[in-house]
Image (cartoon, rainbow, N blue to C red; front, top):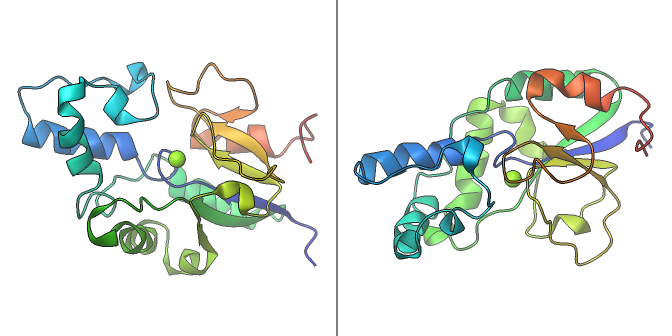
Length: 192
Ligand SMILES: [Mg+2]
C-alpha cells in the first residue's frame, strides 16, 4: 500500500486546451462568425455559449474526427504533471470522460494518442476513462467542470482548474499550472 495520495487529473480544459482547439476550428470553418473569448466563456457547454442555430455546427466540430487528437497542450501542463508525479507525495492518474457521442467512437483512441504525444507513453497505463468520475477512487481530483456527475458520493476532494465558467465557485483552485505547488503541497485545511 502506498502512503502517497492518489491525485486524479482531468484532461479537457486541464491538460488539453479544449476551448482553444474549438476556436481554431471554428475560425477556420466559419471565419465570419464571432468567437467568445475564453475569458468571457460563462458556460461549460459550448453549445450554450453561442446562438442556438449554431449548435449542430459546434457539435460537428467537438464530436468530429481529429478534434481531440489536435487539441493544444495547456501551458505548463506537461511539466507540472511530471513534477507532481516526482515530488513523492502523489500517485498521479489522468482521469477523463470520453465523449461517447463522438463520430465512430473516435474519442477514447484519440485521447490515448494525445497522451502519448504530449505527455509520454508511460501515462497510457495511468489513464482512467469514465463517464462518472465519482466512481473512481482518489484523494483529490483536479477538474474544470462546474458540476460533476456524482452517482455516488465521491471519495475525492475537488480542486478546480480555473476557467471563466468556474471562477466564482467556492473551493481550492489552481489558476495556472506554474502554481500547482502553492495549492497542493501545503497542509491546507481541506487536505485529506
Ligand atoms: Mg475537463
